[in-house]
Image (tube, rainbow, N blue to C red):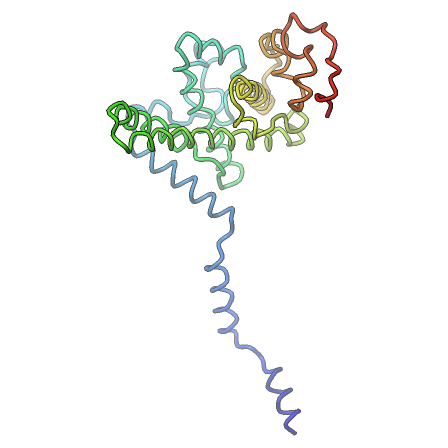
Length: 276
């Protein structure tokens, strides 16, 4: 009798109220990593957006694909679009060099905001902090921290270093997202082109991966917008490493044919230390 009583007690049905409370408790106490990332990135972008004057926000407000004309000047000055504007390497250099990298800051804002808005449109969530959340912490960090650093006020070093770390981590995350886009079946790229950790390498190697990101993101948007192919002479002729399929550091060092236009006919170096 005691055994029967125990068995019946253990098989007693759980009330619907109990099940609902346990389910609610589980769902509220454990938020998914994706939700946490989305909330952080979206909140960061919205916070820094509030610190930008309205005329700037009006000018850089996202536009639909095809809003800007296709000539170089229009592309250089165009607000971000979704899908993003195809900005090849030659165009990026054209805007960056004469402005002492000033325009590159606008490029950084634009590609981050385009990816942010594209993710929202396609996935309903984001994995990057957008143009405002990526660029402006760095900008304000330099504006505030650098004068303090010059005056030897202690927080200056910390603010500048934090701003530099933020933009560096944003670059790593950008490479990750470009890899994800290029891995899509219809991307026209055919797989991940970048090693994200190369962003942490010292110059000029960090520039190598940076130029490759510009090229492959540009190609992705070109295919997505169904625009005709237009050869990028900088990326495909003068500096072949920019458009080459993904390669290791060892392969890069032992293959001079991918370095410059004038080394295309050079044979590979056969040093054992450079073998993969």
